Length: 174
Image 1: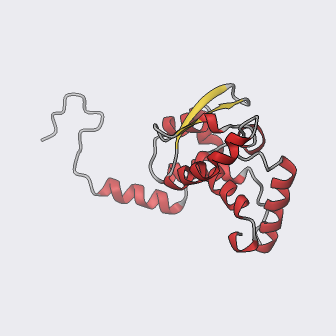
Image 2: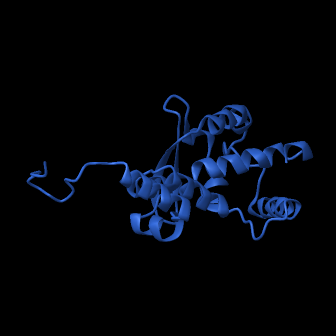
Image 3: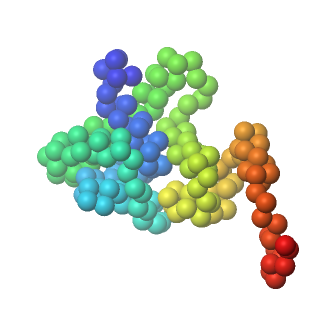
């Protein structure tokens, strides 16, 4: 996409994947004032679940925020990605979906990717839910999916431990 003159879309795609923001209600509305460069976080409102969420920035998301900071500060509303609308985001997603010959690829797929990547990296469900601004049940039901590779790795890890205590509250196994 960068080669095709769509650098801003690349930034948007990375930001969405690295923060788990919902495209229309969070990504298109957060401002540069929501970014705390000292703490390396973005703090934003999630209207769907009526919660505020703080997400730590990945190095590439921080680089994007730093690069777009001056442009956002020039705007009265200080929105970081103000040059996008819901419609042109969808148009760009469709354009690159077709170019890459992908099946249905919508802006919402980035949110699923964000939370699924956390799950694959063994982040506990409570943390995934907090970062996603949802309940643990919602995170597990809709976003965190198991696959054969993850199940096989879990069993290999289980096989590599000699700790037999488990529920044995008296820890008497010798």
